Image 1: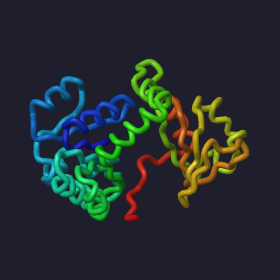
Image 2 (image 1 turned 120 degrees about the vertical axis):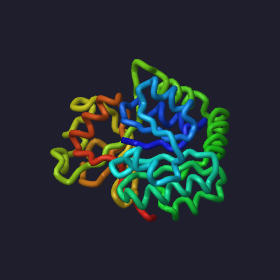
Image 3 (image 1 turned 60 degrees about the horizontal axis):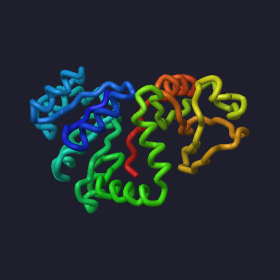
Image 4 (image 1 turned 90 degrees about the vertical axis):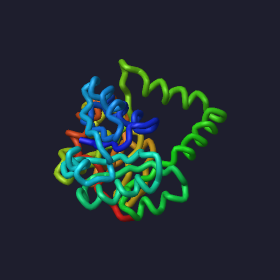
Length: 233
């Protein structure tokens, strides 16, 4: 499951997306009235201060695949990051940076990824100006309740049946129903819209477009092991 600390203007969207793709979520917030609305939707919730060890323990931190910190200030988010990293070294931790200058400190504290909403907002505004049809396509894709299309990733396991096969041989569009958009190698190199003669190798990450059930099938085929492990880089 994933733990979302802070059910504010950012956290609620994180929870909505995780629920939309079928992931188990535990919300943590000090405001019980906010959590009651989530509980009415079937979302598990823990009332309390997310910076306290016992609160995160009640949220199942030791078993969590990932932790999101979207609280209102960088210092509080940093406390969550440090606690989460100490208790569960394997969890993927993503944190909101209120101030862009805090991003590097949050990474050093143990965050795998730092998201600055102000920067993302600025990029979105620029995209609306320069490529409105692309933005509209992505928005409609995310909001379409019937199609439920998502761009997702699947990491290839060492004993996967597809290791050594080409994309042509694997025929993932037929076998899983997905469109392969890119393949990232373990060294970080990315092949966008890869050639059909590209061979699938262990530890590669396949980035594909598909419905949640199709992505699940892709992950089964490639022996996907879940969230990316923490890196100190």
